[in-house]
Length: 173
Image 1 (cartoon, rainbow, N blue to C red):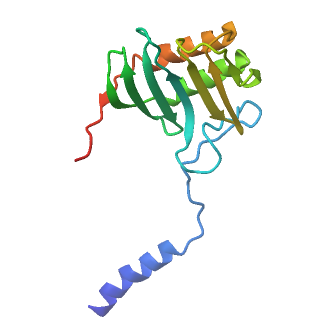
Image 2 (image 1 turned 180 degrees about the vertical axis):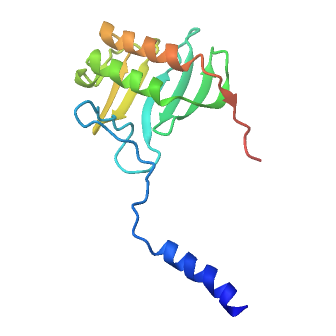
């Protein structure tokens, strides 16, 4: 009986000790055609801010809200006035949409814009857009005289983010 138990144990030990290569699940990447993925958000592994878009209120019926989008795709929306969704909401944004926003920002020269387009006018709303990616951190405030490229970028970002299925965030007790 001892020999019957020892035989399977010896066979198992032999099978485990062979030096066979282990298959890995890592994808094979063709280095000639590979494109480096952009770094969305700040440096490090933390879930840092990638994009922030804010529309400030005015004395009239201007939409006022803020969207913060993080590198993980987690996003928050805070409706502040004259918007369909009031209060805090959250959603998930796909990485494809985030890369589209970053590529469009690059195409329109966002990172080369002035930091502020403003004048001493108190009743006009402001648009504040900040994008952090690939080691760059750019924030632009637009109220008066902002270039068409800035307006176009904001409109495209809004077209990607505002229709998302935002879920109301229940305040903690």
